[in-house]
Image 1 (cartoon, each protein chain N blue to C red):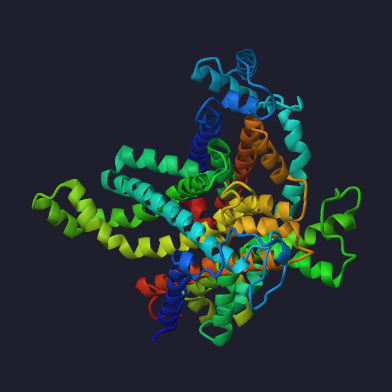
Image 2: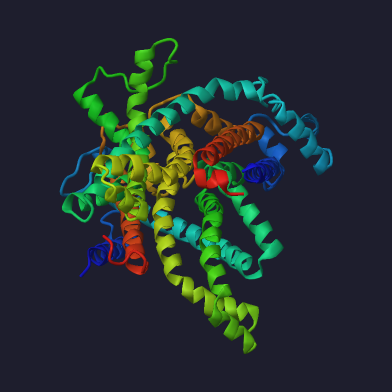
Length: 317
Length: 272
């Protein structure tokens, strides 16, 4: 058990280190002179300005030293100041991360929550017509572009209920109802592919679990069908489900960036697209690093929680 | 005929039809996808324009056909690149084990740790928004998927008796990998390529929608959706049909991959 946790922790450190190296190298691998490109987006490029910015960003020092300085600052949450606004990069991210996080969480709860009963129903009806319809429906759901679904829902809502506020964002603390109302459509659009994916997974895992010996034993000792399904089969079927939910979070974060644009939500999507448009590379870099590290840490937590829950992992050394 | 075989045939026909339409776009499309007709702009479907016209009066149906071309070429190249690079890495890791395996798969873990869209956006931020950048970004994102996919079954094959036999008669490593191991992985590769093409079409459309992929005036489904989004309440047709196009293209490859997996995986045979 302890060895397992130690091994996982070591894996985690290596992955985090690798992520930091890739994100660090991004700005250095830009074809051409990154500094001239950055300056060219807003002002006239002169040799003095290029040298000044290069100095300010520390790009004139040896690569290893650059990495060390960058990493040690990043670990303290210091990503420098945004090139054009002069505000700390971390502050700009913090100001726009909440709508994205809230949207991601909302759709995760919606998609994952509905996937369990739906997957169980599909397993229950396996082989029948209803199962076939749901399976094809699940594949269709998987390939519906969320941003298109969002636009279609916008059209429908604007036609049927013109007074329903579906664009923009208000913080939950200011107007809880308005906040949830505006997040409803984007969350549904984002949740549908997740729901399709996870319900298929629950179906397969349930069918798998139901074919196992311990289910036969449970039935043989006279347990009711409901106890067999929920207490024995479902619990085991949920193990692959939880791993997938962790991976889905990454998909949702990416999807949220796109869907935000449909619904004019001022989140990370707007931040990162704006940063790309004005060649504000340090801001792009910091946003990618913060979100990816957060995503990896959440998955690691799920993983650790798992080792504590699953008796097979608990006893394995 | 089994259910999965029927689905596979229907999906296969559907996919081939779409590919043919895309490749034959120059001769099939009723209009020039770039020709503007300002007088007839933002019209709904009619006999002259089957799916209507966009905000510049361009024929939506013709633009969708050309959009299919853009999407299929970009995604085909992306998945192909990912397969060649990721597949080779997975094969090398499985064949040489030890440090090769550890270093390659660690690198793959690290790439895999990034949320797909975020890594793609980061790569495009470096390379500049273009169709080619989007294709490269998608390829990079899919490299670890192919590497992991190939490594597992390849390891089993490397250990098998028939490979030991071939080695004992003096076949070179390269020959064993390409002539004996790779052909045995064909079904896995086929299924995964189809499924990843389906996903790549969605990613490419998302990137173009964000303005990070194909640039105007080149017809692209994601771009049409973005342009349609701006005029959605005046004329929803551009957005609706472009999105449907993305959906159908992606759906075809997904159904095909799914049905092929059921058909080619002996463990699933007999189940429904």
